[in-house]
Every structure is written in C-alpha cells, then in structure tokens.
Image 1 (spheres, rainbow, N blue to C red):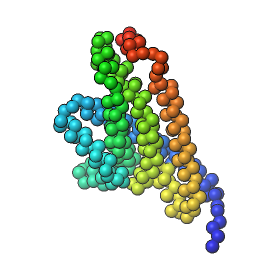
Image 2: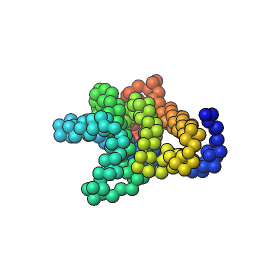
Image 3: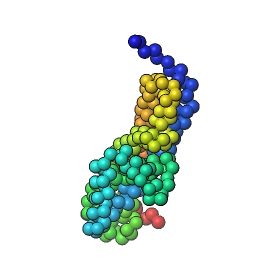
Image 4: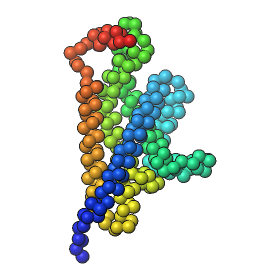
Length: 236
C-alpha cells in the first residue's frame, strides 16, 4: 500500500500549530527563569557548608536526576490534588519542569562558582569590596562565563522537554499536534512539521544564548584581576 502524502492538513491547522509553538516558548521561558533562580539558590546554599542544608540539596538533586521527568510531572499533577492542592495543567507543567531544570542547574552552577579561585576572593576583600560587590563582579560574572555553555544546553533541553507536558494536556506544541492527529489521522505530516518547528526554536534559542554570551559574559583577557576589581569598587 502506497502512502499518499497530504500536507494540506498542516496548512489548514497552521494557526493552531504556531499557537502551540508560542505556548511552548512561553512554558520554556518561565521554566528557564524559575529553574535558573532555583538552581542558583541551591548552589549558593551548598557553599554555606552546613551539613543539614548540604544533605537536603544533595537529596533533591539526586531525586531529580535519577527519576524520569514524566514521573515527576505526574507527582505534581496527580498527587498534589490528593493533598488538597488543585493545580491546572499549565502551572503543573511549569512547576514540574522548573523543579527538574533547577535540579540539573544546581550542579552546573555550583561547579561554576567553585571554579573561582580563593585568591580572587581574597583580592576582592583586600580592596575593600562588599560581599555584594564581590559576588557580582568576582564570582557571578566569571562563573557564568564558565558555566553558560552548559546552561545553554540545559535550557534548550528544557524547551524540548516541554513536549512531555502533553501527557497532562498542557496546551503546548506536541499537545496541539496530538489533538489534530486524533481527528485527522495524518500523523506523518503533522509530526514532521512540528519536528521542524522544534528544530527552528532550538536553533533560535542557541543563537540567542550565544549572543548573550558574547555580549555580556566575554571577559577581556588583557585586563588583569586587579584592574577589574578596582573598576568594580568604583561602582556604587
């Protein structure tokens, strides 16, 4: 039996598919933001070297990294209502994916922070920099420059992983495609098209992250640490 391709199904539902892609980017943006903030807070918590805090963060990270994301999603969506916490599909997906992103991001950010040599912190303190200035100029920017490629890959994976949210009917791209194919039965055309959309979104995000890295995180190697620190102390 010869399969007859018919891409008119794509054009007839183009508005719905592009709307799903827009929702995917919305979900991904929220999860990237919340996941990064969560990962940063947990990574900073580990630098406190408090045993109880360390055990909690390690347990959380290991739980996230060693369980399937779809199980984490179902826990948020199906188990929380049993505890009296009712959450709609969209916020459920954002919560689950943010927690997942935060778990993976914690170790990336921690490694970036720990890459800063202690002598740099001592130099900052000797120049009279405050803790906030030290964190901003000596720790955060150099650490971000080191870990940003890994974070960029994680963030793109978060966007692609948002397709799993279709399992709870979150109205993102894959969920929209599933609804269309349920009535139209043209799986190949629809899924080939959304594969192309995911590829385009991944490339666009990669270009955006690369632009951010070059614009804001590149460090001029001609400037020595002392010059950078002195410039930082002049910022009020």
